[in-house]
Length: 621
Image 1 (spheres, rainbow, N blue to C red):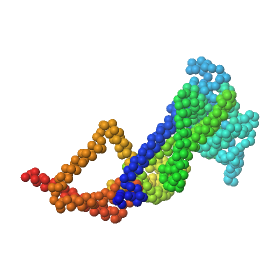
Image 2 (cartoon, helix red, strand yellow):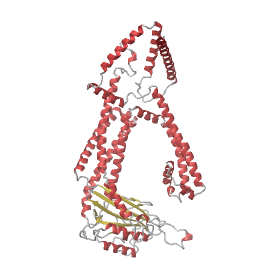
Image 3 (cartoon, one colour):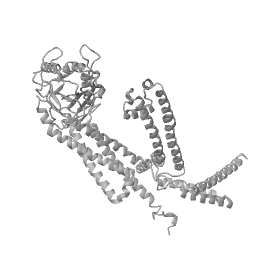
Image 4 (cartoon, rainbow, N blue to C red):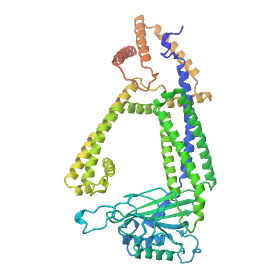
């Protein structure tokens, strides 16, 4: 008969448990190996999309159009434009000189004027640039009665309802008549508004002199009015040396408060994806990615069918589902972007005498890059699922799971105080300090204060009484009190988990140990290490010597040793490492039994010390 102690409550034999663990570890190792292949393939795919030349392309173009000063005024460039006069100086100066490169440095003509300009002699200007203006109607805001005698006109902020669609100026040409959008370009989110497509549009000429005369004509006829709210300057470049497109948009916003706010967008993209042999290798990685996606989806569907609602009790399964959803969204964006490239790219490249709107393609490619970046982020996070069998990682997960309730309670208290200070800072310093100009900016400014990045001089200048009070109290309560409370919660819980692990509350197995065992088994098969049978022979010889020595002991000592052995076996069964849960709380009864076990261990140590003293005395005699 098999003793009852050899069986667990679920009917599993102790002798079968190592086999189950070994099978589980082998399965985990196989999943880890397969997932590492998938992760390497995904990394190759994503990094193959990014070209180091993208950064330098953007940097060169931004330096040319943003940092180049107006002739005769080194302090004025596109970034520092603050008035309509500065805007026209930029249009006739840095913009015009930057767009038209038709001669070499020795004034030798490079090509026919009918061909596109080559910026920095390497970047082809695709089509012609476009300038687009959006306006608002008069009387889109209400003037207070006391000031109506001083100001009869009122132009409000830009909205789709306030937009002016009527002709103005000389009323001839697209620059004086409103044109609706013929493309699917998205809305533009500016600094002070969200802007529609369409507007009052004019395209630049292939000739530099014709474009300059056009600028002069627009300036003389007051193309920019009080109702102007934004002007877009759009053009696109292509560099065949690195196979990159650069889509550029310069934005000048005219807020209702007056002045000009400038912003810009530079997008370097690889729209022609399959040109070199390396590109075709990336295409093979994309196919492999789709195969992995089908395999992983099939595996997860089988698990959901087998475990049903129990499947969703594990956080790792939720991460698996999220990762699969992101992968499918990535595939959708990839297919959509390639389809749009196929449909639009050829048409855009043919229209050399018109404006080529690449902004729509750039918009969707940027979204595709963002989605795949989030996907690879969660793909790396999933590695924690496999290394959670490690002792250190298991302690980390146990600590976080055990203190989650305390952290939630702390977070509620923290954000109540944090948002109270954010609203205080916004209301007191919002009109004076840029970091507190909006409530969202105030929130991020306070996070920066916690990290040591703050503008105390600006706060103090905005309010010399409330500024220092706000700053000192915020640092004291948030930095010295609340953050230290958070660290104390983590520290205390980690100490408890470490104590529990010290008495045997640890995972069933550790992946690193199993890998090490596999390594030692391989060495044994290669006869580079002693086998387990040789170790057993040595141990058996040691047992024989021990048995011979025990025969010389008196019967009382044998009985005491047997009693201590029973105690030891009892508590080893109680606190064995074969625990099914990652963490179990220690009850008062268990603590009492552990104390008795410690007492027995102390007795055994005293007995060994006594025997050693006797042996020492015999040698001294």
